Amino acid sequence: RDPSSSSSSSSPQSSYSPTSSSLPSCSPISSWVVKIEPDRSQIPLSPTLRASSHLSPLRRASPILRLTGEEEGGRGGGGDKPKAQRQLFLSSEEADEKGKERQEDGEQVQEKKEGMEGRTREVEEEKRRKEDEEEKKKGEEDRLVVVPHWFPRAQLVNLEILSLCECRWVNDSLMMGLMRAMADSQGRCRLREIDVSWTSITDSSMKLIADHASGSLRKVKARGCTLLGRKSVTGAGVRSLSSCSSLEVLKLYDYGQVDDESVMEFAKGCSTITDLSVPSCYSLSDLSIIFSILTWRQLRILDVSRIPLLSDAALRALSSSSPHLLALRVCGCNLITDGGIENLLQHSSSLSILDISSCMSITNEGLARAFSSSSSSLESLEMASCKVGDAAVSSLLLSSRRLRFLNINSCSSVSFKTFASLDSLPVAHTMKKLWVRECNVQPSEIINILKMDTALEELQVQTDKGGNCDHGLDEKEVLPSQWIKEHVVLGCSPAHLLLLKKR
Image (cartoon, rainbow, N blue to C red; front, side):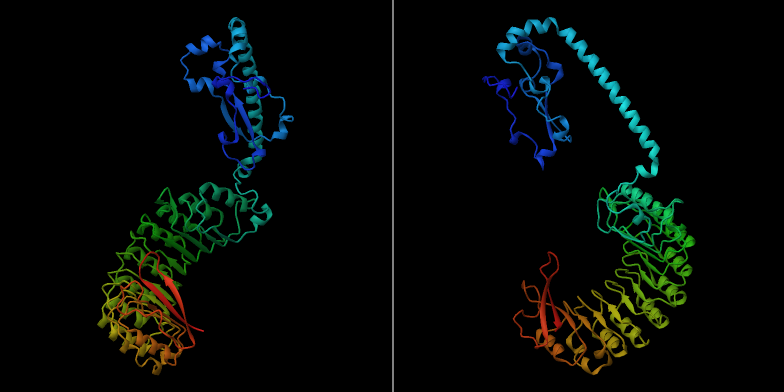
């Protein structure tokens, strides 16, 4: 309806007035232009033709609302719009008078309209052709830069460390633009470290990274990348990194399509790896792990947790071929037995961090024998949810000289008598953290541990909150003056943790 018209009508056509409630919410509204346009196929129509048409009543009476990104100031003040855009239908009186005239001149109006639309279409096509030519002149590289306002281009060329961890909106298109913006005239960049963990990239981005930074790249982290709910990095992505001859650190996580063949091909092309982390890559086996161990003589850190086909053979290869090994994590590998751990501790004198949590084939007697027969250099040992008891833990405490962290959570066979003489052992002067959640330790015994003259700074226990813990520490328990409490809740679990820390 023409807003300038003061006449009112009871018909739906003339009573329509768009309000703020009928428009999509925009912020700010002044940056948008609301166009109210008629359906061109209905103009001109007399009331008789309109009533007899097959159009629905809603379509006959309602205009089309469309939001465009044009500025109001760019429309010449916005005051004088074409009448065809402001008026959907004529009122019934005007239509009766002018219906016959419009019906006679309909063909001429339609021809003029088609001519104008044809000329407009030609102008738009010409304009589009010119824009396409300008884009082609800029080149493919400039058109693929999709991060135009983050940094000046000169700074991106000098970028050496890039972290996009947990940025789910980072995908292949963005990585393509970013890598090309970082590249010099020869297509090479100075990138040394990149972290794209938990993003939406695929193998294409992995290959792009390798192509542009093959000579400078030292560290790659690509853990947990998913696209449309599926893991998006496969063996092809790992294989493409084989061209990075200086790569030292590779960290992946939970990629079922990363197999032995891809890891072996990667190891052939890249022999400088010192830190490999592939937990939950369940398609791997001893074949690729042993091949990599024999290739990477400088290996220092290895995380092969939750690989069900990993066995003692891999640990024997580590013992003989990795003299510089510092940290090993084999959590959840149920094919690893007491013999593999004993052989590892006897021949890996530099090993300081070991995680054998949830290795269900390891026994209490086997660990006790392994700890007593070797001069352990361990500084951190995690044995949570293992079948260990007092014999293994006592043997560890007696043989250790450098132990700083011990995790025996959920080892229900461990009791207080293991720690009764803790303050008289050499380990009492080195151990800083002790986790004994869900162990067979009474609240009064926990207090006795805190009163000992040790270097202990943190003790993790379980509270009795929730009524499901037989050996939890009462939250009202009075601690020695130098200790404080910090409550921790494990997600949705009813088990509550209590961190006892020294002031």
